[in-house]
Image (cartoon, rainbow, N blue to C red):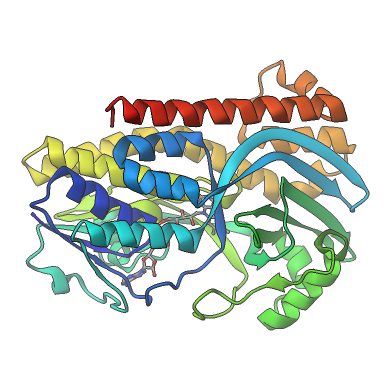
Length: 403
Ligand SMILES: Cc1cc2nc3c(=O)[nH]c(=O)nc-3n(C[C@H](O)[C@H](O)[C@H](O)COP(=O)(O)OP(=O)(O)OC[C@H]3O[C@@H](n4cnc5c(N)ncnc54)[C@H](O)[C@@H]3O)c2cc1C
């Protein structure tokens, strides 16, 4: 089968790898508009569920992804830089560019043709392909070309956000809220390698306009943000220049993308082109790679392309439902920060924790206990032990021959 993936992000590259692993006879090409080594954004977070899936699907790239990741333990919530509360949990984070480098290397090793600096304008470029995977991201041109058939629905979020980097290392996942004369503004930050952290700033549109961000150049905006978050940055600056020089970070509104149909003829949507989940639950990359595995599995299962694509759509639509609901709840919570923040820090941070919409009764006592240093450290140690055990189990499964 001749397969073309339009877009060399996590979805496109991982689908190419997953399809080729299942059949060496597929002729797979990935077409990416950017030069090699160039992307937007900084680090991304993920959890053990993704690692389990990646190890099952392709242990070779899974190991490299795990080895290139760092772990973070616990979450901190700061209000005004004066009040601090703690949340539990742990996760992994990884440089988005490093993830792409691992996937490109693996794809090339499997004889996949990865073509950089080729911006697709039209599907007629691929008239002889059996399957075209549209994995060209949130503003997908491929999706727009067929939007009537795909029945695309796009909702624009209220808040403004900007995705920055910094050399200030945040070992815990950190939320910091500051009140300015124009209203509340906050960041979400975590480290993703030895020298760099992701730092995403978010605020309501009133704060954004009130602080003049609507008329400031990117560099001026960063200077102002450094001043606002001075006490959290410890003399480090914020970085708005993307790696590879494709431009400076810009303020955006989150776009919630949904499609009633995920395919039209032989074109299938994947990753952000098909669906987005708000960045405050850190799951878009995980879901994009999950789509990739699901389509590769369906391709192996069926001889008929329509059955393959229908099976893929049904499988992934159902798998995404809970996550999409949680992402929507989380986005709404952050759009309502000025309302939530008038509580004491323990209540406020608990409200932040349960923003996704589920909270068993035992959670609140655990939250109170987490505010006590000795109990927090104990919880963190248990989390690390759990993480270590899960990693050990993954390796053991691998050695025993289970994919
Ligand atoms: C602020 C922010 C923070 C995030 N944090 C996390 C996180 O912590 N964890 C997480 O899991 N996810 C996170 N995400 C989401 C994640 O970045 C995306 O969900 C993920 O990148 C989707 O992968 P993709 O391959 O579908 O799209 P992309 O990664 O966007 O890749 C699409 C590719 O297609 C290329 N392309 C576009 N148009 C064309 C064209 N016409 N021709 C050729 N190539 C084209 C682009 O250059 C790009 O390389 C975050 C997103 C944002 C905005």
